[in-house]
Length: 151
Image (cartoon, rainbow, N blue to C red; front, top):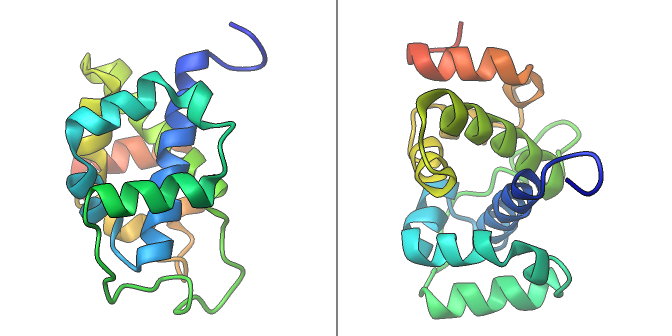
């Protein structure tokens, strides 16, 4: 482990932040982005995240949008936000922590847990920046995730 966290966790953080960045750029819900990119490419991004992390995120996101035909949607949670909007890095960290819990506590591979988390009932709630759910503790989010409702 170099730095404060495991390399795998930092790689997951980057992939989640990239998903958020693409979702904002294309005005799509994050599950749409995840499903368009697909498991195989997400695994590739995760495996090489330390390399991609040093690239320009605009260039990388444009390439992924084009390669995976991610069209412009109508979901703009940034424009709809009434309060301070979390950065794509902030939301990447929220998803990273949830995915680490899902993968670790349910013995799943990180990308499988990622796809599951982004396609869960909780994802649209985390995308609502007018609520404070994304500020909740990782343990609270995981327990809510497991229970199928906000506790």
